[in-house]
Image (cartoon, rainbow, N blue to C red):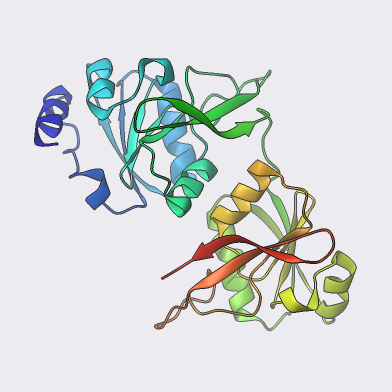
Length: 278
């Protein structure tokens, strides 16, 4: 690893940011990006990731091919820029929701990649978006499917129903707005009727209820789980964090609890969608 860092450091242009330590030791929400100083689409991708709440450090590099070899990006997975976050590499125009899913699930892989530069992913928007895939790069360099994207923008409009006096609901609204969603809020006096109309089971209920992309979002569900939902589009009714666990978004506190995000099936049954621990 010391040799790798030495090699990468030698590739950086004078005056650029100093390379961070081993990615596994870094803040998992800090993304270190290496790119050509002349690449416009790379900079657009940086803006996308920053808009989703990540802190991004950028280093301009003269010899990107050497850097990719040192990081371990296979030749068939290469794109323009290369990033490192949470002990993984991110090659090319990978959507932020896939990065969030990677950091939440933490599979035993080397990183994610969108090979080439297809029209449609973040930073490569265009008039005729193409379907594209995000691949997981295994430790042996083989590629496996991680996520498929139609090339069209995922629905980002969210409708939230809440009590006019609920402060934690408003904190959750502020949280998802900061993650790039456009949110419309309706203050409702009879939330139970809204929940029944949307099909939220009584065992899954929380304070606020949101609707996005044909799904309901019940309670303090993290944004990365909403992004994963909209990417994978499973045949379910929605997601829920029952109750109001301390530590979930909008319910921050001094003694955070582990909590579960449930997928609400069409028949009302609950299955585990994601686990979160402080």
